[in-house]
Image 1 (cartoon, rainbow, N blue to C red):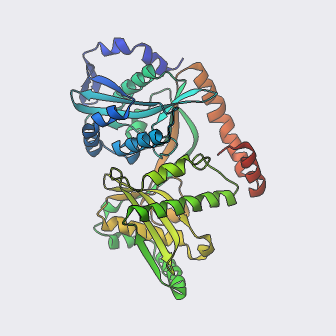
Image 2: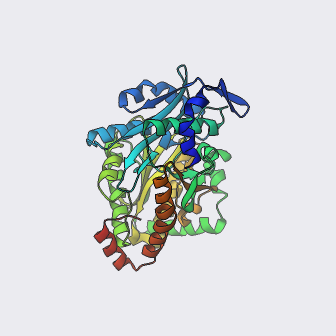
Image 3: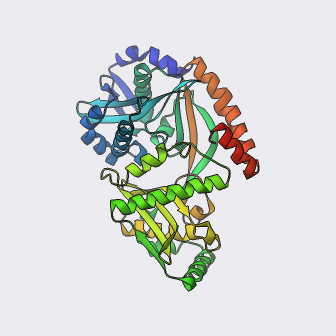
Length: 406
């Protein structure tokens, strides 16, 4: 049995202690853990959650109150009876010390706790107050979650190497899948956009000027930032349609495009004011040739979905547009732009660094350990490699027949 399971059996004994050492600080063992399963309970700690986001080191969008609220609203709107949120919050009186937003997922093979909104999000993480050591906080939050919602395993996909969750990962964790990287543009390392742009290789800048000049010989090239909800919705719909068509052409699919849920969720975000959407388009002759949208959180931009017109591939519209996107972020005074996984050449043209990302899983039961070992670590990576190496035609047929994603 895993050490995580042992933690659940000894929770009461551990909570009897007067303090839990957390680095140079200490979290008292009598701090209460609350399990949040309803929208009303979520809203009850909205002020504390938002406050924790602003001062927790490395807090990212996908564990924010706004993101979790959007997930709750979407699942309620579509009447998803299977939605089973399990948010564990550690409080000192009214002060929120740490929060781990999860949901329980039942499949034929196992029951898993995964990040809230796992089908739509990018990064897995935990919010922990400054001065508190993440490991003890995560251990207590996980114990409480597993006691409240028994499961076979806990799955954390796309955990950043610099995150609180990566530093707090229990010793019995399993790494699943291949390591990835998330390109990032640290705008706060430069006094202005011109200084940042000057760090791009001279040959690359020249090539981009030539690409833009070729486009401008055929018509005007302009950049647009959507100002209205309808404008943002238009960018969202076009990028999703473009991505889906591109995957189809390549004989690929993904969890996001396996059904309409991801598209419907994204469209529901266009008019929200608790999670600002930044949607942008590069136009040529008044028609979009590259578009991208994402979110602003804690003075950072999170690039979520992008698409481009492959008829203009010779002019690298995606690369040109990303430069416009980053300049727009600089003009808004943002600290940086997270281009998110995977690493791609057009992103690396602009990135100042790449943050490593790994998928982690924690076995809770013997069944969970067995499925993690056989499927997540062995069979799934092998199957994915085989399918990706197939010609696009047979691969598309296989994806259609099985209804599976990579």
